[in-house]
Length: 324
Length: 212
Image (cartoon, rainbow over all chains, first blue to last red):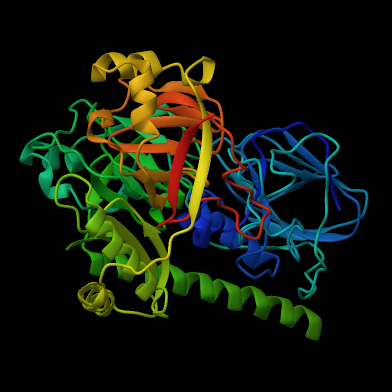
């Protein structure tokens, strides 16, 4: 059991979401930085679908009610376990009664706390993530409050070294100055003027204050325009889709996006770049770079291969500890 | 049929030819049921005269999926759905139907005529989407096919009956909406996350509104 010691309505239980329920009109949901979340589960020896916490509101404090292997990933926060500082992207065993304190990160927006076995919240519509709008899933369908007791599933992972275990190559956390997002051209890309197609990749796009789990609204010097006004019928919408409403200022759909929409789509941000974007603060800048589907596939496969290697390395390290 | 990428692992199939057409939609329902039997296809999201599919791009080549989609569309015929029929009583006008006077004004009808027209024809659920349990109903009489509000309302109560862009709908939950609200529906919840069948409406259903 984890006891929440601070009120934090925007800190939520998340997993990889419920993609199979999108046809019911239910948002996909799940961790915004799926990369950091995956690494957290790898470090504690979980399957990728185990539930953990997405933390965006700091300082955040919890108390462990039993011995528990946990990991912190995502935006690098100053973490202390009963006053003992821990490195970024680190996993270790907490003893019953110990308190974990996470301070606001200097860079990045979201940190993740995973526990061996995963959080034991009910599976709703194929996922354990919190759907705040629909008030279901996660812990009682809401953000966390002081006094909440979060149950954990049985820890079946291998033992962990006494001082813990971390990742050598730390997660990339983007600078406010800017990141480059790889995108695929979407259905209406060709409907935009040549000038708009050029602007899309040439100009810097500022992330406005309207950037949350539903979507990131961007702002650029030159608005994007289609050759002629388009009136589209509603269609399915996935996280990563870049919509262009009549204002010409793009909106990138994020994890909690509505499941359908009708604005023209100019592109699609592909993983792992969508994870990177989720760490960008309002006021930060992004640039777009168009790649082919083949290139996007190579990047995705390389990334998945990287996750598989990390999983093997973590398991091998833990196995080595046991034999000693 | 126009196919475009909707992600590294997703295609959008667009069959629309301008305005929404019921005959295209019934063929899309058939396509959906055929695709549900294909192990290569993961999630299918119905749209208005379009459909989005996802697939496992580590397991399958996009070109193979594209071919499956083309072939299946050729096989798809008007879906032979035996529709369920729901009758939903509506209290028109008043606080929860505050756009009734506006709709009357722009259509040049009396409020009574708007209600008579809205209750005159059976509607069909084209698809469920946007928010949990939200069913897009087609078959709106031409005179009531008016565009969305210029400015969306921030908070519309659940079970409000709205009208926009040639569709009508009952809102499953409280939230923002750009639709014109005609009244309040009296029906079971349109969405229940914990129920075996979470959505009251499903594509193909017939819905009739009656004045409460």
